[in-house]
Image 1 (cartoon, rainbow, N blue to C red):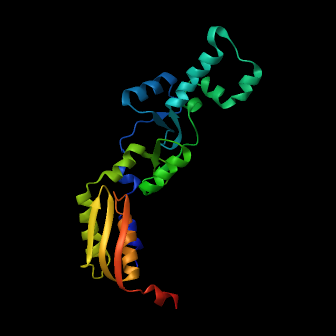
Image 2: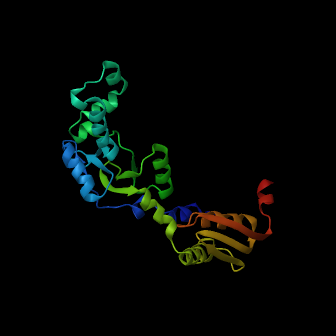
Image 3: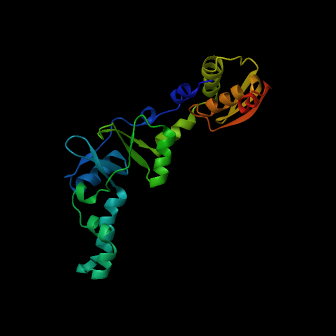
Amino acid sequence: MEATAKEAGMRMTVADVMTGEVVSVTEGTPFKDIAQTLIENGISAVPVVDDDRHVVGVVSEADLLRKEEFREEFYREGYRPPLRARLRHPKGRQKAEGDTAAELMTSPAVTVTGEATAVSAARLMDAHDVKRLAVVDHDGRLTGIVSRRDLVKVFLRPDEEIVKEVRDEILDQALWVDTAGVHVEVHQGVVTLTGWMDRRTEAAIAVRMTSRVNGVVGVVDKLTWKQDDTKWEAR
């Protein structure tokens, strides 16, 4: 049974949860203007774009604080650090001395497209230890921003909505088999499937498709089947 297309359609994408109206700065934006942008908008990082809206980097609070940290640590009362200290922190020293977004930003920026799944975006954030990603089109132009908070919303759907989607869109429409014997229960995002289906492979597909419904935290498989057709496939 072919289910991959339908499964892919039910997976929430970055475009579904991202913020489309995103604040950005240019490479020439001064330090103070960047700081003011973060404060006024209540954000902790801002993408840096060129004249054609291509994302070239990101400036975060950490990048700005590095400037103050280096001033306090090395330049209090006119003190200049020894050469080995300056060489030991070349990147940090460069950012500490920077006055524009181009000099302060982290580049290249970690980006994601709107077509990417919310799960893949979350994994990308975890891999790069960032709290948000710039969302770009296929030409690298800025289209939005997605944060960890946006991704958490995926798992906040009411249990009743999840039950309805599993019942109506998967069991009654997508599978094209008899699912009258299947019962669906959801508690805090965990779906429990009980009852029976005709074939073991159909039950496995039902479980897999259910696990990819937006808001599902996990699936407890208690389904039984009348025929173990996996034995046929092994022959």
